[in-house]
Length: 319
Figure 1 (spheres, rainbow, N blue to C red):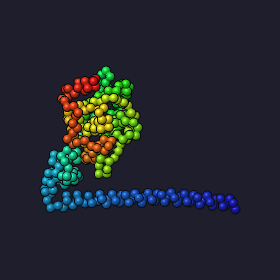
Figure 2 (cartoon, rainbow, N blue to C red):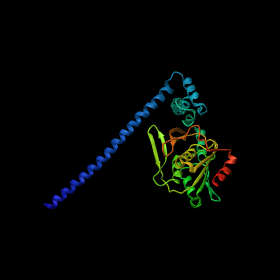
Figure 3 (tube, rainbow, N blue to C red):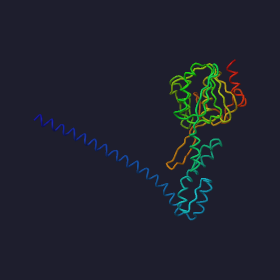
């Protein structure tokens, strides 16, 4: 009797496990069907609009001209008129949405709410992938950091390679002239080189409020005096670096050179499967207090031409 009872219990346990597995699989399938159903529903609306206009609108010429006006040089000509309209329809819709959004934006933002096709996208990707290298030079008791850009997973690591050189010097020059910015994630990593663990180093201000970014890398630099060099081609993350360091360390940091570009916001780059790119503004760039800098640019503490900036920085640090 005991053996039979044990056997029945085991069978019952197996049945429960089997039913649970089957139930889990069915649940996953139902969820997948719901997700796909929603996707088909929304995709179908868009597809119907495309089909209705291209196949049935009374004037294909008017539709074609509307696309040409919106897309400009991005419009692609083909021998088959229907194929031509279908080819251009997606970027036409994106262009209309961005155009309407940009009606409410200042000129310095509209440049970054943009859709790139074909050769345009290739040029953008080539510019973003240019190989520039961070270097550190020694000049007496001064470490000169020449930082050309912010590349995710690269710039901080290049700086860390010079840890020994930098750690033995309490006077720092950071040359951000012609640094056109780059990854905000890398900006946070580079800022971390100046802060203790878990300190707020950078913020982003958007419709969702203020988002704080904490130090996430090893602190590399202790300094008594710092000079930051900048010019009109110091842009975006480079401006944010200068702004954050000046804001946090105050009089220990002096900015020398020319007024910066004034791009005080970050933007997202989305790559479509066909290689096209969409860029759009996501947030304003702020210091640890949640304050951004002017879209007119950062005005240096001491203004001078590029040719004189480095000499002026060295003289200031030797006082």
